[in-house]
Amino acid sequence: MFSFFKDKNKDADIKLSDIKLPEHIGIIMDGNGRWAKKRALPRSAGHTAGAKTFRTITRYCSNIGIKYLTVYAFSTENWKRPEEEVKALMSLFKSYLEEAIRDFKDDDIVVRFIGDTSAFSDELQALIEENQTMSADRTGMVLNIAMNYGSRDEIVRAVKRIAADVKSGRTDIDSIDQKMISDNLYTAGQPDPDLIIRPSGEYRISNFLLWQSAYTEYVIMDDVLWPDFTSEMLDAALIEYARRNRRFGGV
Ligand code: FPP
Image (cartoon, rainbow, N blue to C red; front, top):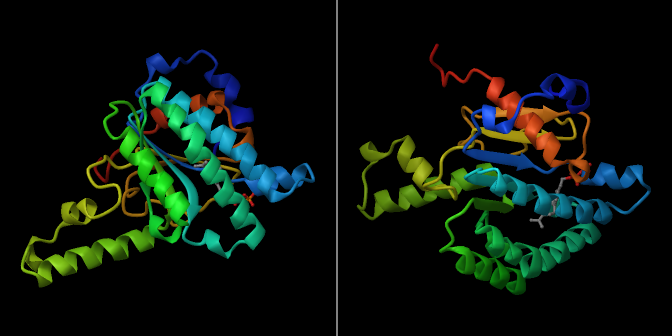
């Protein structure tokens, strides 16, 4: 548990330059619906506000030198939401893929998508492809946007890919190891997340990076909803992360 408002003063004199930053941060952008409800607005207004926060925090992570950022934008389970909300999210993704994410060019951000994007409209799929191609040669932070992503789904996909390789003789059962599984996930070639931040006080993993987060530090922020999340709060999570003693199962 981590309370930004209760804990913030004790960290007032710690600077980011004094601490070891995580290489890879994951964020579960939770609380958009509650943010809207508190203001008597439709849930879609919460997502619009959350998208603005996504843009600000992505830029901030890139500016402070984070190498990988993975954001959970739409899960394999989110299709169960009311049609109107799903529609609003799709239209938000479209406008962000057309504009905001292209603007990440100035920040040299590499944009990648993780998840089964074949479920999206042709138009959205074309924008996803375009964003990936246009940003592939950049050298800055890698931004993974998880869309129609579910970690169990990702693991099933990896198992099927490996089984197909065994069947065709490209590999054999004895060669299957942890690295082979990691290499068949959407995040292949990337380091595991060091830190996952979840605002809005839910103590759940919600099918996000299950394999990759075996040794990840979690910072759950109780007193903030994603649309209100600020760079100052990210700093507080980074300071909290730096305090943790990571042992990776050792002593
Ligand atoms: C969870 O909050 C949030 C989502 C399911 C959507 C996240 C999407 C964005 C922030 C849009 C921006 C993303 C991009 C890539 C443009 P919730 O709706 O479950 O909130 P609640 O728990 O308060 O109901």
